[in-house]
Image (cartoon, rainbow, N blue to C red; front, side, top):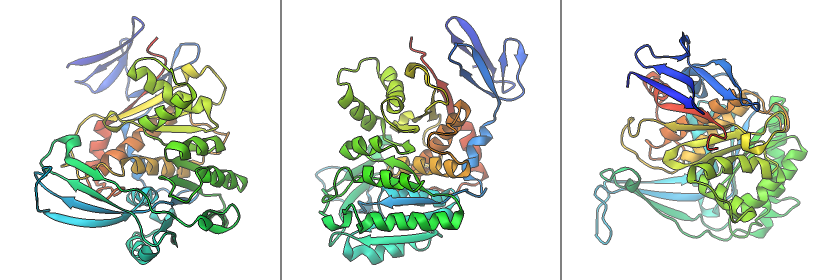
Length: 429
């Protein structure tokens, strides 16, 4: 197309001349792309010029103001098999196989290492007693600030992932997951146990950095752990000035979000299930429901920032405004990858959400965000969305969950061209 025009309510808002590469407002050529947002009185304002280069800053080496602690309470050993031409009901030979000692918090930590901040990252894991040495060994060569592995049940649960490089898109990866193994209840006592160890690690980090760390609470809760355990951790972390990002589902999400984490990162299905429990007869088109689900997370729960991933449809980010306003007008940033499979063959879809969480955490730590203060403006949520989407997309092309490929100049340039974000408002009415 020679040009693209964006119309809102019968008014020409923005035209983009693809020959020059610049947008124009009316007949005025703009020297750089603009990020625009709609204010509450329905007028349009510019946040100033911003280039796509800003999305690549998630890979820069600027120092962090605080450390990031990635917590995994429910570790898993993922047995990964490459089986070209995989068919059900047939005996087949794998071309290769690997065991990955992982968990959602570990995948988030691996992504942080890929984003260049391993030295600011502490990893905290609960795994099977028989596998403690393996977990320590697998985490010891990534340059993390510290690695703490606690023993829980006798062994660690195991999952199987089958990758068929010849299959198209979403059909290329098959997951087989098993039920969890019961953990000793003594590990999750309200006084002492794992919680005391985590609080001690946070205190040590605060003393080292001069600022309280960020804590990522990722994954399901194991058998033997009370469903309100994340809520208990968030409450005690807030008492010592520590912000948390919560990435879980089901009852753990329902109870944990009530405790007031800084941010939550469910996927769209998990977010909608959570909100359907509150309002079973919610209506609207699919797009309306998605947009409103992100808003309603902030409207119904004491959380400052919501990032909701939606598979191939990208992800959404919203933040509570500095000034209260109607929930229906809360800006939501939607980021999506415009080009599929450009970086090679998809190796796994596991860990994309964890990589997105890592990008959020790094950005939070680069620019301090305090609970109840300094809520990100529209410009910042667009950058958060774009950076999170960039990291999640890169994760697709490596076999280990959370592992990011080499972010050389060509990869960053690709991200600048193909990861885009737009601010959405009440456009459906």
